[in-house]
Amino acid sequence: MKKIIGEIVKRGLLGVPIGIAITYAIPFIISVCVGDGKFYPVVPAFMQQCANELQAVGIQLGMGSLMGFIFGCAGIVWSQDQWSLALQTFVHFLLLCAGYIPAAWVCWWMNHTVGNVLLYIGIFSAGYAIVWIVTITLQFRELKQINGKCKQGGDT
Image (cartoon, rainbow, N blue to C red; front, side):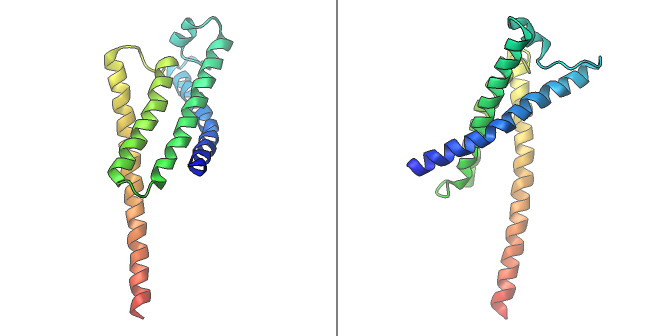
Protein backbone atom coordinates (compact mmCIF):
# COMPACT_ATOMS: atom_id res chain seq x y z
CA MET A 1 0.00 0.00 0.00
CA LYS A 2 2.85 2.40 0.82
CA LYS A 3 4.36 1.70 -2.57
CA ILE A 4 1.20 2.62 -4.47
CA ILE A 5 0.65 5.77 -2.38
CA GLY A 6 4.25 6.79 -3.08
CA GLU A 7 3.69 6.23 -6.79
CA ILE A 8 0.47 8.26 -6.74
CA VAL A 9 2.21 11.17 -4.97
CA LYS A 10 5.18 10.99 -7.37
CA ARG A 11 2.90 11.06 -10.41
CA GLY A 12 0.87 13.86 -8.88
CA LEU A 13 3.95 15.99 -8.30
CA LEU A 14 5.12 15.36 -11.86
CA GLY A 15 1.70 16.54 -13.06
CA VAL A 16 1.91 19.91 -11.32
CA PRO A 17 4.02 21.57 -14.07
CA ILE A 18 1.57 20.27 -16.68
CA GLY A 19 -1.31 21.84 -14.79
CA ILE A 20 0.55 25.11 -14.57
CA ALA A 21 1.26 24.99 -18.32
CA ILE A 22 -2.43 24.41 -19.04
CA THR A 23 -3.28 27.25 -16.67
CA TYR A 24 -1.18 29.61 -18.77
CA ALA A 25 -2.10 28.18 -22.17
CA ILE A 26 -5.82 28.84 -21.60
CA PRO A 27 -5.38 32.58 -20.86
CA PHE A 28 -3.07 32.85 -23.86
CA ILE A 29 -5.77 31.35 -26.11
CA ILE A 30 -8.41 33.59 -24.55
CA SER A 31 -6.16 36.64 -25.07
CA VAL A 32 -5.74 35.72 -28.74
CA CYS A 33 -9.51 35.35 -29.07
CA VAL A 34 -10.11 38.77 -27.47
CA GLY A 35 -7.90 40.10 -30.24
CA ASP A 36 -6.80 43.46 -28.83
CA GLY A 37 -3.10 42.56 -28.58
CA LYS A 38 -3.09 42.42 -24.77
CA PHE A 39 -2.33 39.40 -22.60
CA TYR A 40 -4.97 38.63 -20.02
CA PRO A 41 -3.33 36.39 -17.39
CA VAL A 42 -6.77 35.62 -16.00
CA VAL A 43 -10.24 35.87 -17.48
CA PRO A 44 -11.64 39.39 -16.95
CA ALA A 45 -14.71 37.97 -15.17
CA PHE A 46 -12.42 36.21 -12.69
CA MET A 47 -10.34 39.35 -12.22
CA GLN A 48 -13.50 41.17 -11.10
CA GLN A 49 -14.02 38.55 -8.38
CA CYS A 50 -10.57 39.11 -6.88
CA ALA A 51 -9.03 41.99 -4.93
CA ASN A 52 -6.24 42.47 -7.49
CA GLU A 53 -4.45 40.86 -10.42
CA LEU A 54 -1.81 39.21 -8.23
CA GLN A 55 -4.48 37.48 -6.14
CA ALA A 56 -6.28 36.29 -9.27
CA VAL A 57 -3.10 34.92 -10.84
CA GLY A 58 -2.13 33.27 -7.53
CA ILE A 59 -5.50 31.53 -7.22
CA GLN A 60 -5.32 30.42 -10.84
CA LEU A 61 -1.78 29.13 -10.30
CA GLY A 62 -2.97 27.16 -7.27
CA MET A 63 -5.93 25.72 -9.18
CA GLY A 64 -3.66 24.80 -12.08
CA SER A 65 -1.23 23.09 -9.72
CA LEU A 66 -4.06 21.13 -8.09
CA MET A 67 -5.46 20.22 -11.49
CA GLY A 68 -2.04 19.00 -12.63
CA PHE A 69 -1.58 17.00 -9.44
CA ILE A 70 -4.93 15.25 -9.99
CA PHE A 71 -4.13 14.65 -13.67
CA GLY A 72 -0.79 13.15 -12.70
CA CYS A 73 -2.37 10.91 -10.06
CA ALA A 74 -5.04 9.76 -12.50
CA GLY A 75 -2.43 7.98 -14.61
CA ILE A 76 -2.10 5.29 -11.95
CA VAL A 77 -5.50 4.00 -13.07
CA TRP A 78 -3.95 2.49 -16.21
CA SER A 79 -1.68 0.27 -14.13
CA GLN A 80 -4.63 -1.40 -12.38
CA ASP A 81 -4.47 -4.63 -14.40
CA GLN A 82 -7.27 -6.26 -12.41
CA TRP A 83 -9.71 -3.59 -13.68
CA SER A 84 -11.44 -3.80 -17.04
CA LEU A 85 -10.58 -1.24 -19.70
CA ALA A 86 -14.09 0.20 -19.29
CA LEU A 87 -13.60 0.68 -15.53
CA GLN A 88 -10.13 2.16 -16.01
CA THR A 89 -11.49 4.60 -18.59
CA PHE A 90 -14.47 5.58 -16.45
CA VAL A 91 -12.40 6.19 -13.31
CA HIS A 92 -9.71 8.05 -15.28
CA PHE A 93 -12.33 10.25 -16.94
CA LEU A 94 -13.99 11.04 -13.59
CA LEU A 95 -10.65 11.94 -12.02
CA LEU A 96 -9.77 14.27 -14.89
CA CYS A 97 -13.21 15.89 -14.66
CA ALA A 98 -12.70 16.29 -10.91
CA GLY A 99 -9.47 18.15 -11.63
CA TYR A 100 -10.51 20.23 -14.62
CA ILE A 101 -14.13 21.26 -14.17
CA PRO A 102 -13.69 22.83 -10.68
CA ALA A 103 -10.59 24.70 -11.88
CA ALA A 104 -12.52 25.97 -14.89
CA TRP A 105 -15.35 27.07 -12.60
CA VAL A 106 -13.16 28.84 -10.05
CA CYS A 107 -11.02 30.57 -12.70
CA TRP A 108 -14.06 31.55 -14.79
CA TRP A 109 -12.86 29.72 -17.89
CA MET A 110 -16.58 29.11 -18.38
CA ASN A 111 -19.58 31.25 -17.60
CA HIS A 112 -21.40 30.29 -14.43
CA THR A 113 -24.64 29.03 -15.91
CA VAL A 114 -25.97 25.47 -16.02
CA GLY A 115 -25.95 25.53 -19.82
CA ASN A 116 -22.32 26.66 -20.03
CA VAL A 117 -21.19 24.13 -17.43
CA LEU A 118 -22.92 21.35 -19.39
CA LEU A 119 -21.39 22.66 -22.63
CA TYR A 120 -17.94 22.75 -21.04
CA ILE A 121 -18.35 19.20 -19.74
CA GLY A 122 -19.52 18.15 -23.20
CA ILE A 123 -16.50 19.69 -24.90
CA PHE A 124 -14.19 18.14 -22.31
CA SER A 125 -15.89 14.75 -22.81
CA ALA A 126 -15.59 14.98 -26.60
CA GLY A 127 -11.90 15.84 -26.33
CA TYR A 128 -11.36 12.96 -23.92
CA ALA A 129 -13.20 10.56 -26.25
CA ILE A 130 -11.12 11.61 -29.25
CA VAL A 131 -7.83 11.18 -27.39
CA TRP A 132 -9.02 7.84 -25.96
CA ILE A 133 -10.09 6.48 -29.37
CA VAL A 134 -6.82 7.52 -31.03
CA THR A 135 -4.77 6.04 -28.17
CA ILE A 136 -6.66 2.73 -28.13
CA THR A 137 -6.48 2.46 -31.92
CA LEU A 138 -2.71 2.98 -31.88
CA GLN A 139 -2.26 0.50 -29.02
CA PHE A 140 -4.31 -2.16 -30.79
CA ARG A 141 -2.33 -1.58 -34.00
CA GLU A 142 0.92 -1.99 -32.08
CA LEU A 143 -0.40 -5.12 -30.36
CA LYS A 144 -1.39 -6.58 -33.73
CA GLN A 145 2.14 -5.95 -35.05
CA ILE A 146 3.69 -7.59 -31.99
CA ASN A 147 1.38 -10.60 -32.35
CA GLY A 148 2.32 -10.86 -36.02
CA LYS A 149 6.02 -10.89 -35.17
CA CYS A 150 5.42 -13.53 -32.48
CA LYS A 151 3.60 -15.74 -34.99
CA GLN A 152 6.42 -15.35 -37.51
CA GLY A 153 9.00 -16.21 -34.86
CA GLY A 154 6.99 -19.22 -33.73
CA ASP A 155 6.60 -20.62 -37.25
CA THR A 156 10.31 -20.76 -38.06
